[in-house]
Image (tube, rainbow, N blue to C red; front, top):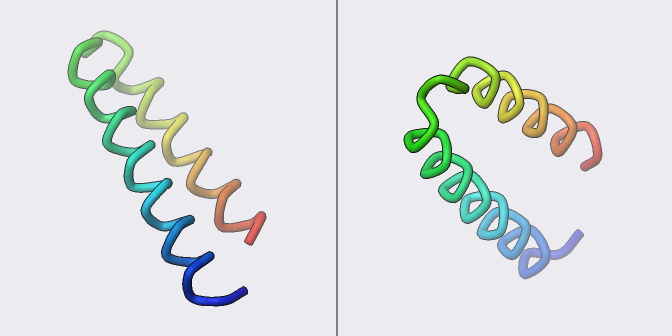
Length: 49
């Protein structure tokens, strides 16, 4: 993988994480489930790489 591709992937994942975090704050009742989901997605992302 070249640097532009890595940079793009990092930017997109940060953007997605920020959006997820905003929703996460909005729905505090689902905070535990959302946190578990984010950790799971991060794990899948790193394994996929």
